[in-house]
Image (cartoon, rainbow, N blue to C red; front, side, top):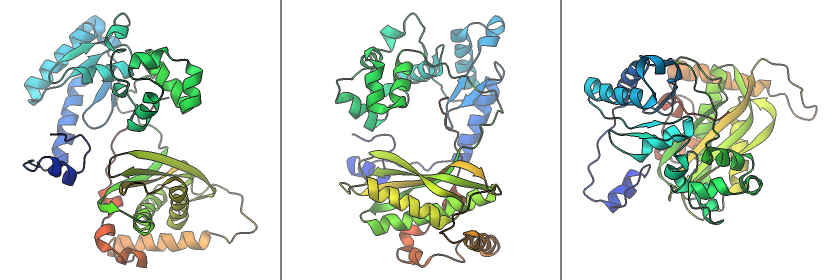
Length: 360
């Protein structure tokens, strides 16, 4: 009936009036995810999460004990089904990109093997949008240049792709040709924090700049308090914007002085938004992120012509202590009272960290 993954509920109900909505049980998802990883750990200690329900495993060292990759995948598939009562689909390949692609090719309860000998036959005919990290906007850019399949992408001149997408064009070309050589982290290995951010899908569409400003300030305050709690400051601010047709983009910009002050973060986020959004569609989701982090107590070069921001930092630390003692809503910006239905959420307390893979 046209309902798609990631669609907001009210739009899904318009397409399918009889849709049954099942409430999520995040604690249960976490418990089963943990139990599945316990099974994986019987075969390797190189387990890297990709979201809550997917993992990459490097089983190279277990082949002489448990068989080749396909044999281990089948054993894991059967164990998860019998021990946890759920099905898994597994992709087996020599790199992460094609292993992920293989896991999506046959569902449910299936195994797909993509080897160096057969990937051109299995992978290249697939739509380019099936390739990891090719989103809707990138897919459209490819379509404008007659790149419709993964094979089309793999055969293009890499210099042309770099002109189109920058270094990311070369990365996707490498993925399409099977040149992904990113290693899989060992179990328990933590990645260095690279950014702190929050995003939200709003209770209604945002239709003007005032709506956007309210949400950005709520998100900026959450980002700022989390930076302060970790003893960090950001030197780059990024925003993500998604309209009500689920078309999204991200923009980022440097700030002159490292900061964990919410007003600085919000001001830069608003500057980025005004410079990059044309209001062709209402907005459904916004995100604010502080990146390029530095320690908060590091020495910085002061600006001779700007006031010292230590007073503002002290003020925000005082607000932190008040909210910690009396609750998150004991002190708020006056603007938050304009539309309490829109701003009545606490992204810091609602924040849940989901593991997200990254390329090196």
